[in-house]
Length: 420
Image 1 (cartoon, rainbow, N blue to C red):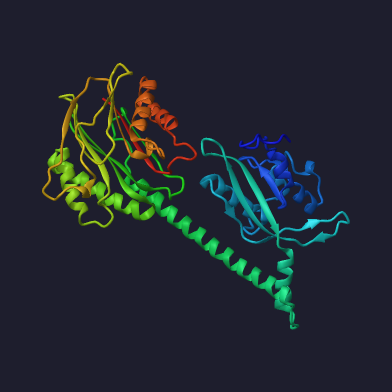
Image 2: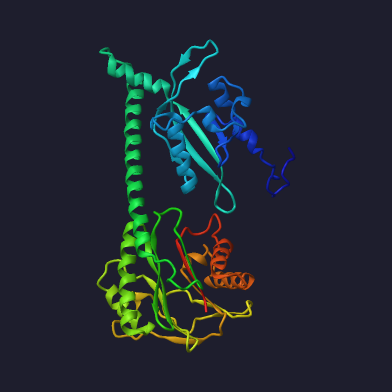
């Protein structure tokens, strides 16, 4: 190894991460997202008394079989754990489990394990590998069993080991209770999402909608969109964003979405409707930081009238498929940021047949430590690049182009594409 120059830093050396993994002291497997074993470190090989070729290239469930009839089987628990890792991109600790090894003498050795599965994320934030690591806690289990079965006093070390295991098992049970509660909340959240977020209006194949929840939240958050079809020639489209995630944000979103829908139906004027929504938000805890945009598309006059309450501006792609107009003439603060008597602004923008209107929430464009103008420019470029696509395909392309980086903000996104 060369010496660093005087006053300088030591030259960097490439790290052999394969060697690091194989030399790590904790027994571990390296899995693909398809749960094929690609490596086993030396600690696991030594513990299991197996060769690497008995692991590598095999499905993890060939090595640790599942049993659908037994939810406590090691393979079944492992299946549930890795599914959670793939779904959340977060590490998952499994409950204490027994898995026996067959010794070369054909005798069966009882072993107890504390497993954890951790993701390795790629540049796009997706899981590319899973490190499945285990700690052998057999000695702790034996000490705990001895404490329960023996009337003789255990040594201080044995008592401490048994107490640690009891505490560990209690934490594992609490963790499992939290998982069950999370699953129940997620089922409720999915139901709320289906009930409160409409599909595109019937008879409007020119409208596409997308909803992408934050990966760290339940399957519904605080973003919403809404459509009101007013025959024969008007379409009212709204998008909003409640601060927060989970059931509380979903419930608040439902209240505000319904209130704005009622207000725009009654008034037909975006600014007046948002004024009414702002007054309503004063009576609802947690609603004052909400942003929203309400538009009224008049297909006969070929105009878009809109009002914004702290929300990012809609974009209009002209029929040439290249030119993008940012509709930012009407811009007001979020719902709770104006006095009760303050009027909200409104603007009208004309369009030509074949233009495309795009409304969205800030999760589509915002990035950590980046000015919002950079996100708007990125969206405009993507629109111009994919402008020839039909609304459904265009919506998909925008989400792919503007998917946040792995180190970007974790926020939900609502997107509406309307071909005019």
